[in-house]
Image 1 (tube, rainbow, N blue to C red):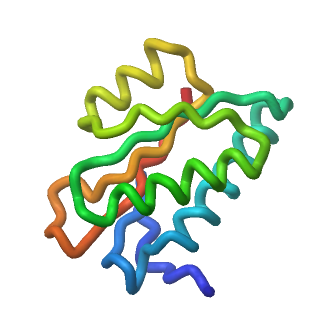
Image 2: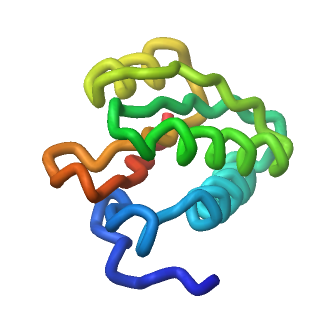
Length: 119
């Protein structure tokens, strides 16, 4: 499956679920992010936080990003259901090497997304 280019924004990924963003794409995003962070930090033993919002599609996408990180050799710490500020706080406070949050924020319910942060 090709990545729809329109889902990639300046600070995150957002698209219609499942036409533009689905479990396969979320998995690939997590693998690519994990590989990028491993290269940036020069090591493989990373810990990345994951979380999700309350959209109906979020649990499936959340599982896909956790699987992608784990298969990249990264410890994925699932924060579960959380707000964006709580997610950002947890990544910084606990010193994780980054984070992926499944959320489309203010977009309509048909959308979902991935917020991507470093430490």
